[in-house]
Structure formats: structure tokens, C-alpha cells
Amino acid sequence: MKGALFDLDGVIADTAVYHFQAWRKLARDHFDRELPDELEEKTKGVSRADSLKVILDYLGVSVPQKEFDALAAEKNEAYRGLLAGLTSADILPGIPELIGQMKRHGIKLSLASASMNGPFILEKLGLSYTFDAIADPSKVAAGKPAPDIFLEAASEIGEKPEDCVGLEDSVAGITAINTAGAFSVGVGSPNELGHARLLVPNTGALKYDDIEKAWERR
Ligand code: B16
Ligand code: MG
Image (cartoon, rainbow, N blue to C red; front, side):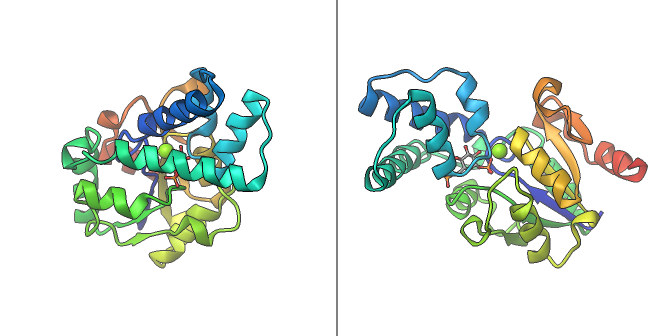
């Protein structure tokens, strides 16, 4: 195990809830509609534009490109507003310990988030200098579930995906890790993340030794 490819929202920090709050506000303000909980999973790990397509599809609305871009920008404004108070206290349980142990074992850390706000969030969490690389989602051709962002994250730390673990909380993200050829570790429920090679219910249950054992048995 030479590299760890980390998803951000839902794995390092609980920002996934803020994403959906911002989408809900957009749907209310512009279309006077409520979004159901099921849409949250469908937008997890999915790029901003693809998430907006999912939401407009659900609402049965189609808008010209200019309005589409304006809606995406407005959601991002609202999301950034919700992130304003983010600090290292918002790092999810178990993550500081896991990151510390990985670093002690010489494992390189790379961020594989679909979020354009990744560097901003890592800075707010005080983790910018902890990561060896951040894959730039604007540089990859296809978003999760395509493997591109995980391939890019592995390449940024000079490792082969087969020598890396990938950590994810989304259906699309686990598929992306598996297709990239890395070892997938899921955080969530078997109803959604049954395709993860190792699955834990929450980040508090992410233990270095368990990951290492599962890795050796892979
Ligand atoms: P942004 P991850 C993903 O982050 C989120 O899960 C997803 O809900 C969001 O739409 C996407 O980032 C894009 O984020 O609008 O900040 O560029 O889970 O891949 O870390
Ligand atoms: Mg995520």
C-alpha cells in the first residue's frame, strides 16, 4: 500500500450535507419546489454540473445554457456561504488518526474529490500541508463514476492505482475506484456501497490495521 486516494465530501469532512442544503435552497428560490432525500445520494460525488442536471431532470425543467451556468454559480455561492465557519473541528471522527498512521507508514496522500472547492476546504480544515497532492477535477475528462479523478490522484503522487487504496462515501465514487484498479474502502451502508472491497459504517470505524489486513487479503 503506497498511496491513499481520499474523497473529500463525506469522508474527510461532513460537507455533503451542505451541498444538499444549497441545492434545496436553489430549488425553493427558483422553482418553489422541495427536493426529496433520495436525490442526495444521486448527487453525491457527482460534479456540480452533473448534479444540477439530475436536479433539473427531477424537477422536469430545462433551461438555456446561460441560466444553467447562473444556477450552478448561485448554488456554489450558497455552498461557500455554508462553509464559512468550517474549521479543523469539522474533520470527521477517525480521520486525523487514520491520516496520521498512514503518514507514519510512508503512505502518500492524494485528494480525489470531484469538488472544485477541494483546496479551499482543505485549507479551512488545516489539512493543506498534510496532503502530498490534490487532483484537479477540472483537468479530467469524465467525472465519477468514471475512474479519471482516481487515476489522476494516483499519478500526482507517482504511484500505480493498483498500489493505492481509495476511500469513498458515494456509489459513483466506489465504482470509480474499482474501475481505476485501486482497492476500494467504502464509508456507508451495504444497501448503497455493496460494491466496496472493504466497507465500514462510518469514518470512526475506519481503522488503519483493518484496512491493512483487508489490503493483504485482497
Ligand atoms: P463543487 P467529493 C463532490 O465531492 C460532492 O460529493 C458532490 O456533491 C459535489 O457536487 C461535487 O463534489 C462538486 O463539488 O460544486 O464544490 O465543485 O465527494 O467528490 O469530494
Ligand atoms: Mg464524497
